[in-house]
Image (cartoon, one colour):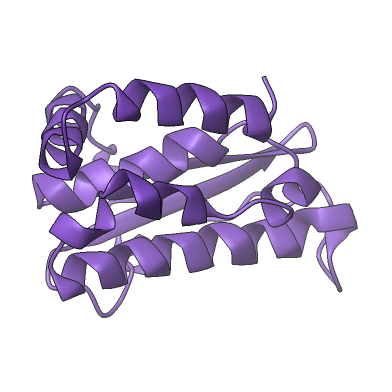
Length: 149
């Protein structure tokens, strides 16, 4: 499934819920079932700075596709970061770069987030995009098979 198809599916799923607060509650419930990162991934190099909650972000590049995982000590942060990680995982860098998470705003998700949590969402998107840029056709000075923390 490409990102455009995933966007339609996700938008339809979330729009079926009554309001932005219900949508966020749904994502938090999903985050409760999300596997925690292994201790080896919960290292300072994987922390996203500038977030009040600790948020670990782990990108990988395999077989021409980007994969993302995250964890946080805040369920809300884990929920919104996990939404982006799940949405963009398994896609080629060029496809990721041609899409952005702006489609989430009309669903009312971001208006129920504190400024710090919106900041965390923005930082995760920045990391996703930066990783895709590094791995798009190998990026400047970066081998296409690179796997990063």
